[in-house]
Image (cartoon, rainbow, N blue to C red; front, side, top):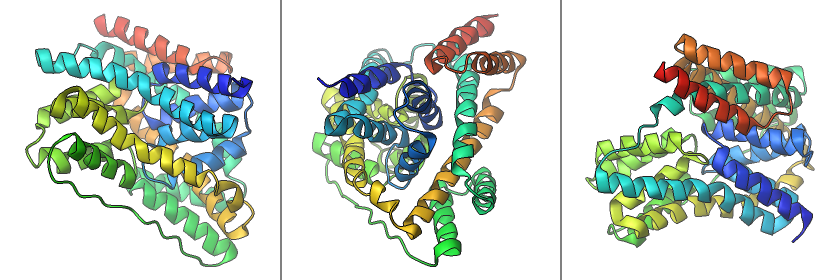
Length: 363
């Protein structure tokens, strides 16, 4: 086994069990690992992969993990990074789904979530500033980034923000061009394992945006048709929040409620399979994009808008999470830890937030 592949295994095996907080937080942790600590690439290269990830459907942080694995260790790295980032969350979710189906309730995890969220915001902030510096290469990109932040905060869908920023900058810099994205739409017939697989394959192949967009799709596909209850969907959202790794692992919980272990396996395979395919295809294209002035300009603006979207997510998370002096204290201490120890492993910040949240919540 090559040294590079061993590094990929080490990084993503750890992130698979410590990366809490959603895509923005996961990407911040990945940046700390591969740019700050291990020097696999610089911020500019990281941003190119992030921009490319945001242009394709599917779970962003999972696709970013797959991209980084491919960059570091080729096709074996692509597979190992994706699998190791996904599997721990899926295994934890299967256990929770079994307990839920047996006993009808979720474990009491609110005290731990209480502290994780403000700590995660500190992780994101310390990733956004260097990425913003690398992505804003001129005054026009700075203006577009500001517009993107405002648009995202006003609720404009992030894919419109990303493609809009790219098209605007490319048009202003090198003239007009058009990008077309074909989105496959697959239809299903019965709620067997095959039907479950196809439903989630469709979602994984066409979904842009956060995990909350995923839950909107699931509501349409399963809740509205009577296959899943609203309470089960709400509990699936909770599972996605308090387990590590991708939020999309909550589909494992949903698949289990629909058809036991085989349903969990079908749902998980369906929703994540498109990510491996899309990244494998686009990883060949990204280097070529940089050789075209028009598409390089498009990617530059997408990179800036990607950072803007992450910043807006951070702001929204802060408004929702830092609503008490206890949460504010955890956030401030997390910021100080990053400030005093720039190379500290972000997983330690998450652990600190979790136990501090539990202690303060109990008090």
